Structure formats: structure tokens, C-alpha cells
Length: 267
Image (cartoon, rainbow, N blue to C red):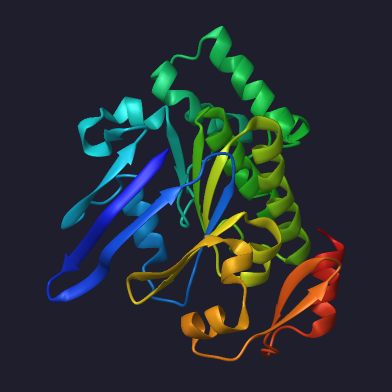
């Protein structure tokens, strides 16, 4: 279990996080949602020890995370940041090999190679493992980075905006893949995500943030309500039940009801 207790982060006079507390439920997908500048990515980075906080603590399986060695943390949780592009000339397999570094220190054992093989196969990348990353489509490249985190063989996987730069089809495929990881490999996944309909359709729990605070934290059906969403986004959002899914209809310039129906049909 990961327990976040009263995290605060001040940069100068600006408060980025304000006494944030939550628990990451095991064997589930937790989506962190909220408007731009809400502190979503900052919370993810603080919970995984990528940044220092002003006050508060994070417990990983009962131990304060700052007391653990980096290798211990890397064997318990994997993090894929939003800016995961690399200018290095790497093949898919070479990238996925990096996921084994906490165990191999760069010298892959037979077991390490087997885990890499399994990760490539699980992500449907076996046939393109020798392809270079810059030769792949955006969806394929994102799957390669997910395969790297999968090869790290951790119980917890943290993903910051995993749908960035993906079209609707590849976004649906990515979310379906994350659900498979929970169902088939008992992973615990935390994602920062902007699209509230993907959060509604695929997440089990939602942490809703605004201005550095957690406004709502609980099962998705408790958060995906017109009243709750208005408090988060300061706009009226209707909820429609389409094919058994709670779909948020807000008619922005980019999406129509037909777009939402197509998304749900692909779930």
C-alpha cells in the first residue's frame, strides 16, 4: 500500500501542494484528474520520490519512502513521466532492457532476458523489437515505454499523461492495456489523465485535484457526478449513461456526442 500523508510543497511564496493526503488502493487503476495547474503531476512526482516536498510523508508498504534505498524503491514502483522521449538511437529491445537495471545493473542475466522477452510479447512488440524508436508510430513508441516499465517488474506503476499525443483509437487501446495489466498481472496503476471520460470508463478510483488540493477522492461513481465535476472544473457537465458507462458531456470545440458514443463502443 502507498499512503500519502499531508504533503505540502512550497516554491517561494507559491503553494503547489496543500496538505494532500490519499491512499493508493492495490489491484486497481487510480486516475488523478483536475484542471491545468491543479498539482496532478506534482503529486505523482512527490508520491514516487522524484521531488522533495516541504512537509508530509509517503509510506511504501509501511516504510517512509525517503528511508528506502533507490534500488528498493525501483523494485517496488515504476514511473513513466510525461516527457519520455529520448534522442538516443535505441531499439525497442534496448529500451526495454533498461527496465531491468535495478536488478541487472547493466549486465542482463538469463532471468532478465526472459522478463524482457515476456514484456515485449505482452505488449505485442516481439516482431518489432529490433526496430529503432524513431521508426515507430506514437502508439507503438508509447507501448515500448510501457513495456520498459513492465520489465521493471513492480507492483505499482505510475504514468503521467500516458495518452499524450495518441489519437482516440490508440488512447482506447492504451487504456484497455492498463486494465489488462490490473486484471491479469495484478498491477496497481496510477495515472494522471486529462480526459475525464477515459477516467470514468477505465479507472476504479479517482483523485480530483484543484489548486494544489484534493477536492474528491474515492470510487469513480462518487466523483463522476455533475455536482462534483462542477466543483472541480467550474463548468456545467452533464452525465449520460451510454452502454452502461457514465459519460461526461460538455460539448467542447473538439468533441461531439458521436465522439463519446464511439469511445464507449470501443471500451
